[in-house]
Image 1 (cartoon, helix red, strand yellow):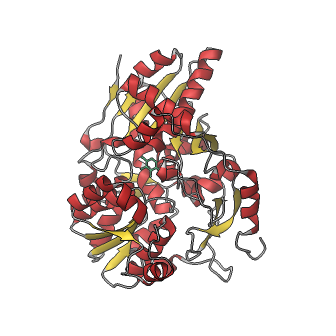
Image 2 (cartoon, protein in one colour):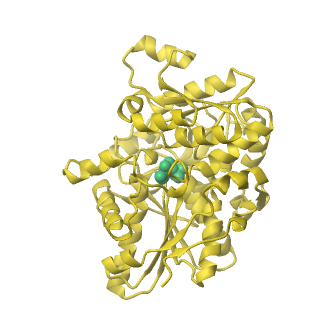
Image 3 (cartoon, protein in one colour):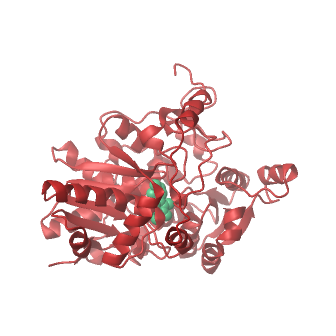
Length: 451
Ligand SMILES: *Cc1c(COP(=O)(O)O)cnc(C)c1O
């Protein structure tokens, strides 16, 4: 009865998988303010060349540079587990597997892209990175990656989180990053916000504006984004590629793949390599799981919208709740984005992916059931995938089906115990995003020629 399915270090993938090569239609181009497609060169003020190439690449396989594989080896290959104890606890005939990305130094899947982005910046002569972080998961991943390749990292951390979540901040400082509460007086965007309201608590949109301004204004500095963009999903495909090798080892294959979906990076990373098999006739269902409080795929509009709240980015065709969407402050901070990856959105629109929304309290109930069976305490984001996977396992119990279910355990919840505390004290609530708000957002979407 095998529990942990491991790979050797030399089995870390040598290539990332680019789903664009297997998409039925080419990705819809981003548009500029004039409604015309924007070319990749528009990104050169804030991203390194190789990353920009990856953003628009069409090759199926993209080589992982050796220094990136060496850094990955600090925690990869990540284990695949067969959840025997959870299966027994649920009394399901389904076989449940999970890939544990919490073994990375930062505790989630995010370093898979942070390492690659830090490496390309270093190789192209940049010495400094600027980024934003909300709860701190991306900031800590980039701080770690910057330290691995000798880059200075400045993190604009949303001020409320900076004050309420000091431990992620200390983590970033441990890896040598400079962490500032946003809004700061170091940028135009920050000074403007502070002039209007000196007590401004900050927001992710504002922190993004500060980091982008920082990067665009300095020759030595670039910006790094932790989700949504094509190159980030590309880097995350190590998750699904390793998982496929691990399934091969035990002679099994998933009927369904589940992952939490915020900007889409760990979902794309876990699911896309299986989508490749779907193209060659394999039956596998790929399910993105989101909160009912931020139901981007399940209830959002498929339309061109801005990626940030200030309307500074190019327009992307994606599922969106409107760029001025104000998410309720649920505990899965990583799932509160108004939009979604363009690749995930297009494939979902074409019926190749599925999505489901689950309410907050039930996600924590699933997370606690999981922790009591399997030991690992999952991040609140991850609990969404566990909820959906457990619901399917319980349906299998009813029907007697012996399905193989797989979910991505995107990160551990050791920095999220305050949220578990709220769950145990009964203070957590469910939140259904109101239909009127979704309709209203439609009227505020940017007008696009022909759209
Ligand atoms: C950031 C994060 C997510 C959501 O981000 P995606 O880009 O959608 O993957 C999910 N789980 C964990 C643990 C995270 O840190």
